[in-house]
Image 1 (tube, helix red, strand yellow):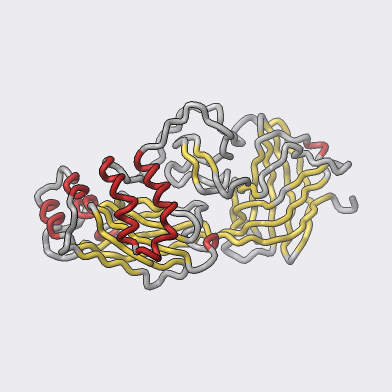
Image 2 (spheres, one colour; image 1 turned 180 degrees about the vertical axis):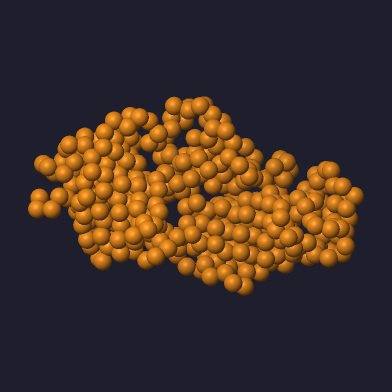
Length: 370
């Protein structure tokens, strides 16, 4: 895929850092390849511009400190009145769209194969190919991968006819995200990939793969607490308007603590509490694609006291660094018991993503004897 891993969400109309075919971390819709242009696309708002500045300045966090980073990037967005990206508890209804490419159209044909090839201790079998109105779906079975791993992408896929002609003559991205991956009760992994064109079933003579991307869910949990006596006092009196938090210049008595004692794939490198937001800078301790900071299906869930309420939060950053932002007013408003008890307000930050590992190979799957 040119330009790295990027895909477009037709529901949010946003470009995400993920492969086409993955699910949108905001609304859950399947992501598509980025169109070459989207006429009428609105100009980015203040929060989007601030997020881009944040991604640009993230490498400076270790040098200048997270507090300066926060002040430089976040301040202007709060003046504009917004820097909060929320994750809805349930996906919104999808608007009608003619641009969505999926395999939900009528099926027009199916061919069963049962062909297989082995390389590097891994066997890939082509079970079937289904075509329909505007799509083709390949069903594969993979043996030889460790238990608990899924297949998240196929690398360098080629489908050829008997004369060696590539049936994907328009070309496909170097990496194609799978549409489904699940363990088979008898062993191995069943996976599917959907192409945005119908193939000639009778012409298929071989399928070539140059690699697989194996994946597993990676979860890290950070524990934190915030003491803001003024906020907690106002929350006890029913906090209706939190705009004063964005305008407050400083809070010398506020105390923020964040730790991740059991984290294996990331570490906390800085923290700050500014203008009513808790900000936590984290970085990967391994190759980013293997960690909870991998952009593929990455999301952050922050819960307050007792874990009952999900708080407004977002995570942003590219490469091996990211910043997590949490709204303190919601933390105070959802606290169990009296928020003005003089005790710090506890919270948990759950960062999860699809950790990935590339496996190189050369599988040429064709009928035995051909």
